[in-house]
Image 1: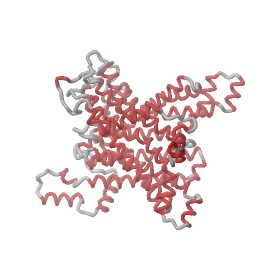
Image 2: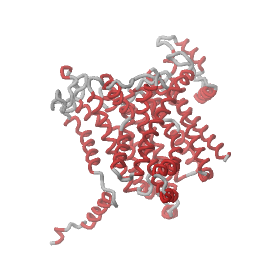
Image 3: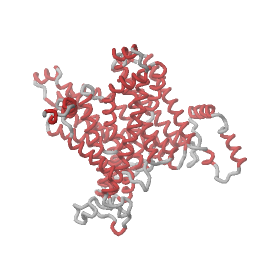
Image 4: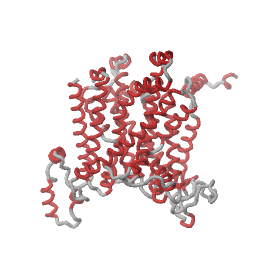
Length: 301
Length: 306
């Protein structure tokens, strides 16, 4: 009978539970529930924005422009965060902007982290000329201010979603490469790498089975700390007019629009900024938390 | 020491050459510059003649060397739009950018120093906790949004300060706050941790035992030592604020280098973009080089490490 109550893999489940518990409650670092919840809301909004948004983000309604948010006397719950100069619903536009933000952040981090980590691993593991060339590239990359490079690239590629992602990847890979290289340098001298080589493992297997699992934690921390920067970077590019273009909606673009009539509608320039701020804040808090868990000794990542 | 300095200068030179290759390559990728220079309906023999005149028919590598040689001589070509030498245009705008970056630095320091010292002295107090929240908020806000909100409140609403342009000291206040906001958080943290290290030191406890007033202990003895790490990162933040100038200058219509480059990007004025970005990268590299060399001067271990 006990077999029914305790499933066969009970020990595995309990091991996994304790592992999860360790991740979430290791030492004194409690998970930042509020930030994680907010990020979850952001992701759900991004996925379902078309279904749950109250209005079409681009629907014009000139009769209804400059509606203040609901807590203002003149405002109403029809447009909880008010409307802009063309009568577009600001809440719906922020929700549509969430989608762009999440898409850009996701791809930018996957590609810059992937390329940067791979080059960092190659540089650290092989050393010699490969290392010199890759690290020289990193130095060159780091000696151009990120936005300057972005401007040159945007001038050439034209603006748009894919440009924004390319620009961010080109800007941030070096950051991953440098840190991962340092990490690999400290790992590659260990015995198990030498033993794997003796056992006849090629570089691919060593990378995949022995190096990658050891840098995954750091990669995760780096990526989560990068989220806020990517969001602000995208907003800056779109604000300058070099990023997301109409009819797509982005928070930075909303701010750039609202700049023209800030005297008439304080909410139009405040709300998208608050969206940026809360999202970055939550992401940064999550990043700090992950760093405390995985990397308690070095607070420099 | 001399070897360290020379090696560091060589590194910087390699970086700048690399930057110039990157910028040259990217702007050549953008298509034929002749299409921008000549009218759309120019006859083909005119185009061919112009191509030979500008050397665009030669191999890419030769073209780069011509570009690099001219750049070293300060010749980036003429601005397509303003018809003046690109470098001249860029250098005319540079003082405004440096002025703004310095003002931003002054703002950051004048907020970060009292905040950092105070929250270290009263560790764990409500002020310390508030400072932490404030710092986290500061790093989550884009500088152009801070600028926009500042314009809305102080220029449009209260009409205390001008919103656009350059001229009086009052024009400098809002852009400096917007640009200087971000480093405040990091600087406060550096000062705070530096102060915490120092406040437990023997000589502070000794001073306290002798009966020296607390404010003299804090400002004269502790802060001076806590400020050393701050001095070493100042250069890094200065260089970073040169990069941040692109957006902030656009928000405040500040007639600096950043805004000039942004406008040049829109009008596809490539000589100005190239000159502007190279000048900013040059300043960036040189500032970082000076920072590194001064590290080496302060801490001999770094000299031998590389």
